[in-house]
Length: 125
Length: 369
Image (cartoon, rainbow over all chains, first blue to last red; front, side, top):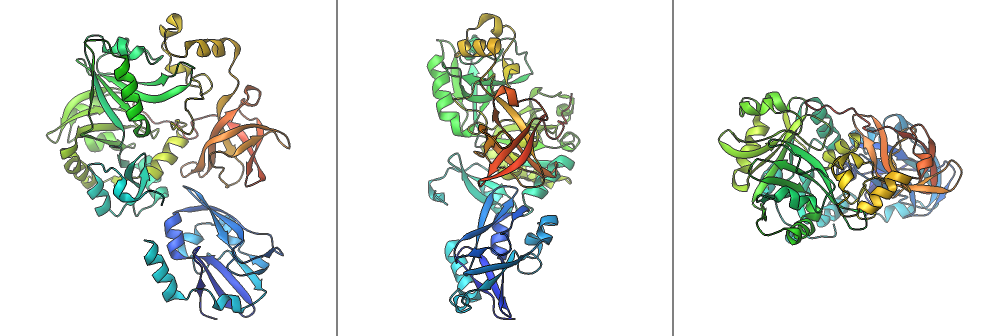
């Protein structure tokens, strides 16, 4: 398992073999509040880095989730339909959103590491 | 966040909100708690199960004093204010000359004066409008230094009783001037959640002491604007600026019940012509409740379409109902689509979401009758 990387839109991405797993950060789930619904991308969809490809709905509002890297969506987390609260309880584990076969794995290394992401969150506060 | 916190007004409870760990957001020019660490869902459910304390001090409070105060207010509203008995409160609308809704308000008769509560976002305009209409001998006394707390929920009455025994005897929309643990208060048995409860107006300087005492009661938890919104939507109650505004008429909004019987014979309120015409011939559109299928919410401004067809309206408030355990919305549709059970489609991000017109409230009211 590789190091987790982060975007300025508060997604995390982690490479497992050739597949990138994507979710939203603990900071993001905390800011959203109780998640009640997620709209996930179609498996097979080609996405560009920064493209809106999922929507997360809390009691209060809807927010877009962006693809951290370009590639093809290879799998989505169907468990979220039944239990969207997974995103609040385990944002970086069982609450993952989708998997991408990245076009260029090096794109991931260009994202923020944990220390840089924490510094970014602090700077936004 | 678009507005910086420096420019925002604060209520007398701001320091308490911060101590409680609230997330503060700008609302109608005030820094207000949208939620506490428990979160909107938990705060909402706690209110329905026990009792929640809300700070609604941003709302406008004022008194109308003078012999002809009720008649003066009736110049601006179709509500029956003259017929409001001492010790009673009533919901009403300020209407425009064109028959739109300028604001909604609560008015209470405290015997020697009328007590008004209006929306935070409209209070400056409301008070200016009222003042401009007053005859000699009637005076509007703004009460910017008073706080307003709402204690809402099925346990509100029994929890408050030891601190203010006379309040347990109030019926729904009853008001009393009393003391709560020695603090002088204007209290009404009302609220914006669909639950039993009280709205309590106290001098700003006493608000924090009262709030701390209430929060210390076992069964009371703080709740923010987020829960207030989901509670009022489940209760089918309108939010000014979303569900009603200067373009919507009382008839379209389904609020004709706020028009006094006598007023419907006199027709002497602003916009009476439009109201009378719509009552006779039917309005162009009607406010309805909507239940989307599944769990996906449809938010305000979502277009409402006929199944597979043209647009017939728009959602004005929408979200997820924690007690309903499902999505809910209200919006305006043509009268032909307003019947309960009518199948419609809500276009959420360009995709149709099946929904049906549903009766409101979505969650039954639980008032003290």
